[in-house]
Image 1 (tube, rainbow, N blue to C red):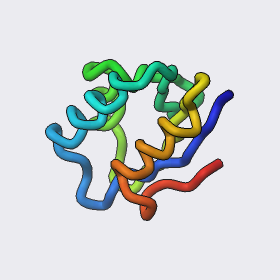
Image 2: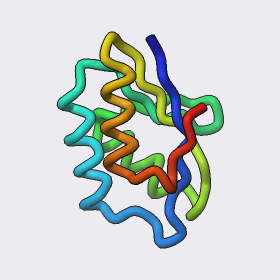
Image 3: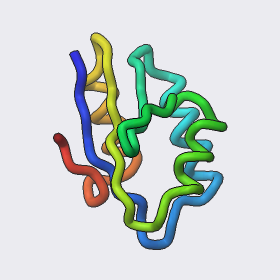
Image 4: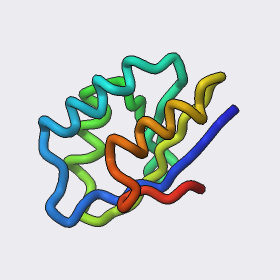
Length: 91
């Protein structure tokens, strides 16, 4: 099963600490987790991938978080909780 949400980078940006926490959260999941931007997929369990995609993105830019696996529903809900509902839209 695959679940997706649209994420918008906050107007204040994301701190390196918050990015590290996001990657650490993703490593707890068995699901495959990717950020998709301009049709490119970035491994959301890789700190270098996520840092490069977030730091090269503009504030308030949107990209998709894709979660694929048996626990996709549960895992995507934990990601939504991590960021808060205000920045995510289920697609």
